Image (cartoon, rainbow, N blue to C red; front, side):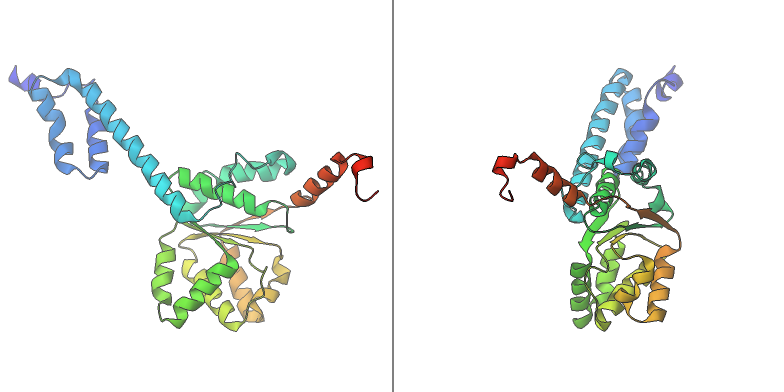
Length: 266
């Protein structure tokens, strides 16, 4: 009789409770709580206990997501909810949704988004970033000019390895508008160093209005340009935003909505 009391019944949610307690870094509770409840004749309370554990797990997930979102520097409004996928080619829209699952991070793959200014590539990759955070991945969004300036300051202060290590803690580094600002030799050096450090270990998500054949405008030296392209393209997913400028479309819609008699151009 005593033996039957010390063994949890098959229907008891013991394994899930142990799993959650272990995840909460509570090894003693994981080891003892289910057995103690059963031995005390409180097996009926196990469902309620599991419910409380699940509430704690959900609360921890929400707090983690909030911390990750604050640390990401992502624009809060640029999510899939505010992205007009209907204006994008069907294949591109489907690929964006697939990338939001985050499988590419496990493979340390990069995402390269190309397109003219205003086509929505920044919004799209930021939407991916928000989706990754919802799944518990760490993401950092940085415009290229700011990222490069921070790296230059770190190099000047002899802290570049420390800063690179800090950046390495992010599962995905979103580098926006590479090529928008022309780089000098020192800026090229720190940018290339960052790319080399993350190569085949961590993912980068890069947007650019310059195609690869124009990247010599960024890295200047042909050898450095070729090496940089090799590192970002290897294990990369390329997104081409061959659509009209969203801002231009909005401007045209506003102009068409103005009655002729009120149009200042008339």
